[in-house]
Length: 313
Image (tube, rainbow, N blue to C red):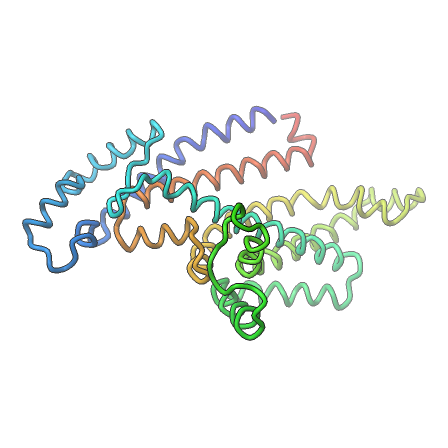
């Protein structure tokens, strides 16, 4: 288990380098630059050249990337080309908002998905068909459209929750929770259906195995067989799907944050991309990659806890 963790951490180093290099290449080939955003379209060629030189944009792309990489290795992600703010401080507060949204959405999707999936496997009937139909609908409905629908229903027609905005937890825990209800539901919808289908299929597969029949034949109560033995074995593929769902919500959060005007990492990345703010884009992509690496590592650890064979390797 320890060897697995060390291997994953070591492999994350070249992964971070490759992602950062590819991101810089993609930014370099996109037309436009931060100097045009700052000065506007009426700036003279001399003004544009002077500002580009001041921002370091006249240097060759390889030189620009090397300077960024050298600073990043030492924990310095630079400053925003547009605002002059430290990238670490700018993204730090936004990362908290995004993680709150994504973790909340993953927890809701996992709880509802496992509950629906296990219930569908053990009871069957109409609930099993509803899970199947819900999975198709959930995959077909975009998160941002669902977010707009939730705003229309529960913020405009029935003014229960705020339509947009984010309230820090330290300012008001109650308003913080209220501001997250609709965004969390919007990002959790697709994950709930996917996890429900996986939990149902895994549970059905485990319930057909020989050890379940042996336990029931020995007089072990049905409830104990289900929740102490069957669910533990069925949980292994479900944990993997939950990890994949978390990673998928990173992408969904970009649009959902824009719909609900949340000051998260996704909305910050969207703004930085439109402004060609290279340090902010590089920093945001780096943060996203680190989150993905951390989630995959946690999934591996959870897999090892559920599967003793992995734990001993």
